[in-house]
Length: 329
Image (cartoon, rainbow, N blue to C red; front, top):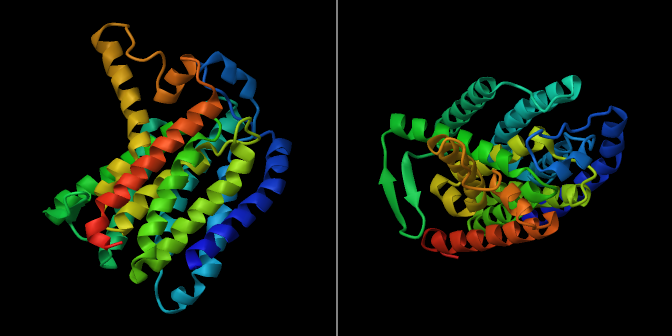
């Protein structure tokens, strides 16, 4: 019940904030600069306000604070740890968006600057989770219901790079109207359903429910044709949220099935660059990441979002089956 309440409250707050945020961003001329190497028809989107991720960040914060308050009074702050961690990534994204808006170029922080900031945030989060005894160095393997035991140093290095990789994979997925938000809704639902069966995970369920509601509120303004983009503010926050939830549930390997779309998007980018270099100019895809390839194959943005979201939902359903033995649904 608390999860549903958090979802509804987050949706309402995000939707209301959007009514004021979008005109304000337009007034500030906080328009998105479109990639020069992207599909040519995306040029028509130039000037669409960015940093719209602020609306679902606000919705999530309001929901977890109000709905999670009773458990917070009993000393359960797991949902705030996740929000705080994701917010750090959102701030990194905000700095990136701000640079783009001020200088009117599709460039922000340098790659090394973003990587170092993200790595530092990941290490700090992992250290906090370990200190609070919410993390173990044992990798739970979905579907096989077994664990791979690692030493803490190995686990921490592995975990830090998984977090940074996940955050950037979600960021890459944010390339067309409504895509990153829609694909992440089933991921939030997966974590909400898992929490519903374990009372000790109730605060995480509240966060997952708030995530779903906030994204649905945001999609009112972001679905094609988008009135606002989430920007790096939103996509890095989302990436941090997905990664943090997986580690808070102490099963980071579940990111493989639930994050299948993110992984495909990232791998298409990596394969495109590698193939281009190996063949001295040939391309494996018409354009990378993967959503641009399908755009150039003639898929509309609406069809792309529908198909990718369906794939995400099916993968999340499979993931739920994969952790069945652990959580005894």
